[in-house]
Length: 275
Image 1 (cartoon, rainbow, N blue to C red):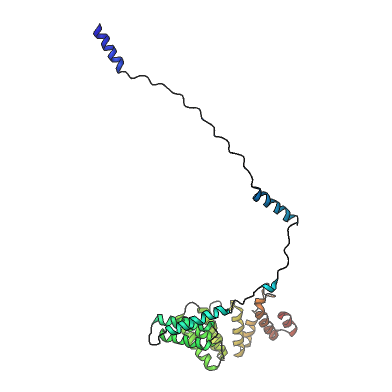
Image 2 (spheres, one colour):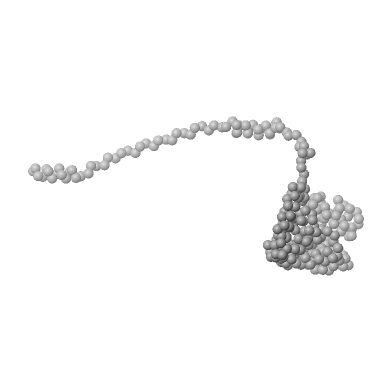
């Protein structure tokens, strides 16, 4: 029996003890957040200011002293800017080498021309634009700017003839201002008295009659060519929109329309249109 008891004791010793179940801890509730405190220096002061403004208790600033204002024309350079441009002109002039050629040198001459143009030196600007074209005959912007610069001075027959050639080159090499250069070419043809050529150029424009200036210029060309019916039809298309009757930006259009109406209707109506 002793051996059997010993066997039972050994068997019980090898059996693992039963697991004891432990109850999960009870959940602990988080502490409530502290009550929100308003900052008197921001919220309440701001609220009082709003209420005071609505009641009309706010401080009304006095009239501004316009004598202290410095009104500047954005189209004109200041004295400081003029000195800077003069310095740039001198630096570019000293750097340029007339013996060199290429697109880089052409752009340097083009920049020099713009600097002269900013100073109102149209002759020097034209010479620099011509030098840029000589260095790079495909520099379209030089043709465009040269044409506009030449038209700033006396518009002799010789100058207008040169401008026509430069504008034709600009239309070939400068694709940034194709429409503007086309309209300018038509106007220059008209100034030279070649109204048929002007109308031919206008015919190359898409939606040319959407711009009242084109309509007026085409009507003038038709009138000079004694195509009075076509001219009157074009003039009849000139109308003032609801926002154009008093807007300062459309003063020229009102004058042109009054001139056109003077040809078509009694003088009284033309005077009314010009107002």
